[in-house]
Every structure is written in structure tokens, then in C-alpha cells.
Amino acid sequence: MAGATPAPGAAPAPGGDPNFVPWTADTLRPLFERVVPVIEKKDKATFKELAAEISPAAVALVEKKGGWDEAAKATVIESGSQVSAKWANR
Image 1 (cartoon, rainbow, N blue to C red):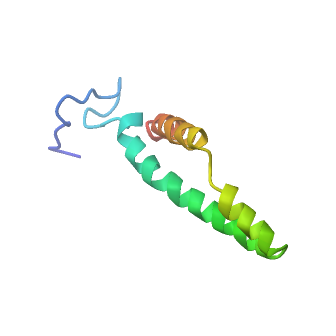
Image 2 (cartoon, helix red, strand yellow):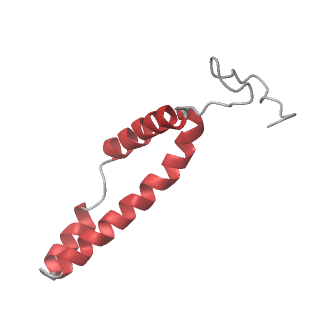
């Protein structure tokens, strides 16, 4: 990219393109905060479809207990942000 300027305060990758702006967990965390609930909702809907083949009581159980644990969601958001940043910078 001829003529491009690096982002203010961004450190270029060692020996790399001076215009490269590295991904960080902090820049990716908002994405994961939005995506994880969508995945949870889809996951729960899939389980409800399977439970409907069994009984109405199974559907009620999935509705009541089918959501993800808050600690698990926080872990996926945090670790997903970190791992994605690592791989995006390769």
C-alpha cells in the first residue's frame, strides 16, 4: 500500500509491513460478545427441535436449562478473543 500511514500509536510487526495494525483481544472482544449469544440461541433451538421428537416435557426442560452457563460464555468470549487475535496476526 503505497502512501498509507500507520494508525496512530500502532507498533508495526517486527520486520514486517510498517502499515500493519495488529489485532488484539480487546479489538475482537466486542465481536465475540455479540456472536456468542447468537450461537447460544441457535444451539438451544437445535436442542429444542431434538427434544420435540421426544416429548413436550423434554422441550420444557431444554427451555428451562438449555442456556449456556454465564461462566462458560465469559470463557468463550475471553479465550476466543485471544486465540483469534493470535491467529489473525500470523
